[in-house]
Amino acid sequence: MTRDRAKIVVSRRLPEPVEARMAALFDVNFNRTDAPLDSTALLSALNGADVLVSSITDRIDSGFIAQMPAGVKLIAQFGNGFDNINIEAAHTAGITITNTPSVLTEDTADMAMALMLSVPRRLTEGARVLLKDGTWPGWSPTWMLGRRLGGKALGIVGLGRIGTAVARRARAFGLSIHYCGRTRKAPQIEESLGATYWASLDEMVEHVDIISLHTPHTRDTVDILSAERMKRLRPGAFVVNISRPELVDEDALADLVASGHLSGAALDVFEHKRGANPKLLELARADKVVLTPHMGSATLEARIEMGETVIVNIRTFLDGHTPPHRVLPEGRSPL
Image (cartoon, rainbow, N blue to C red; front, side, top):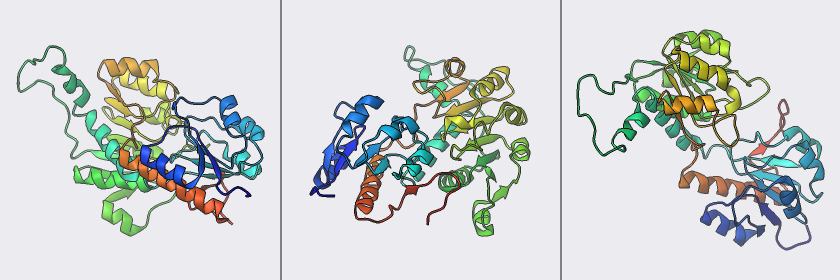
């Protein structure tokens, strides 16, 4: 690299401390409007650049990668998820991809527990009562009854960093912990969480009251909560998804909530990129479903730490080393 400072293109606005740090280290082209850039505008911005700092709103498919200027050798994703990037095409083109895992764990787990509480305790429904005219009917033994969380069985799909953090919190609320994943955890981890392992997701769903999803989007996890699996859930069970929208058959979920087989759902991610499934919206208006707009990692602390992780990945790459948070295509291992 002949220039004194690498040229970085940042596709979305980042917290001010992160942008200030980037500006001090690199020659940065910031997106001052924070409006998502279409492919043409983003490709134009990349002329002469070395690094793209992308986000989940950027569609970096094989066609985009084929048109990228040859000088761009690193895509540093601002986020844990990278479903928006064709990792295989980038790898084939010799482009390194990084993400920002770990720093989101605790905040995302907090949000998962908030969603888990919101359905049985009818939190969003109750929060709206006073907003109508500033009054409420007054306490009575049968008004606004929800369901107790303690004593219920929680099934976690994917006991990774976030799933484990959720299990720790859920155990403190008196939930029994069950989990299913590609590999069984070490006995000391299971013991510390009081967790029961299920080799079959089909079997686990029949024994839990709540399903919480914490597995990545891969070819094998699309619709991992299919209509058939959700029908096997106990009557009155509910679903929490703060991970990836592709994990759930949303239409089937809506139908099972509407029929009363499931007591509800709490979702922070949706298949519809610019909104929620109309069926889910109707159920949310009827207080059967809680919907939040991708708020899992939405704390200032998390976003600053994400930015710092992006900077570490960029600096490590520019120094000629493998970034600590490199993402590889499915089935490939680091050399």
